[in-house]
Length: 261
Image (cartoon, rainbow, N blue to C red; front, side, top):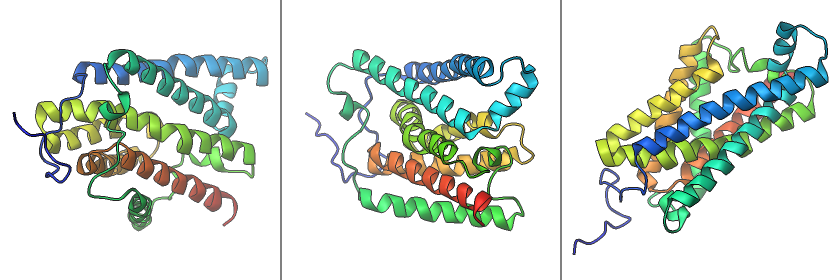
């Protein structure tokens, strides 16, 4: 019998194949997009009827898109719904404990306490590149969501960006998609491919801005760090912690720069 690879094996070696394939991972991403669209429309219609009755569609939509309270709470609930429903579906699909299948296990090679420091180093480096390029640190389409001293709006955006956004995205990209691709194309190529798909998904965040491709490129670099960390540690916990730390840094930075500087 061939022995199982030890936790000290090089990260380029294949991990055990997950109990799902690329098709299911891509179906989960498609489901995520569908839920975002359908629930997004529903939440906006509720907001329009309740908060802006009788107002033109364009005015209501513009106000909703610039409201940290609405965008944070609505999208936070969408992410939470996705996380719960995808997790429930996986429990039905996976025969056996779900945590080991998703690699929710202690990380190898890099201690979990070191991950926030790695995230802060990456965040500062990205800020330095942004400033050196002459661009504002806060993307133009996100600035209205944090501008104005509105603690409820900040809390709603924190709920989305820090609490529910990172676990949901890590489940979809590094929990489901990465291991399925790594088995097929190898860990190295899978890291780049998952990072590219992750970056392109952020067109929904940065699309339409003046420098959208600059921010997509940054999302690709962040994706490389997150997916590389998943490959290196063979655990989903480090990319979750790094993603949450990066988003917490960005949220606090936006609040400070737009309101207290």
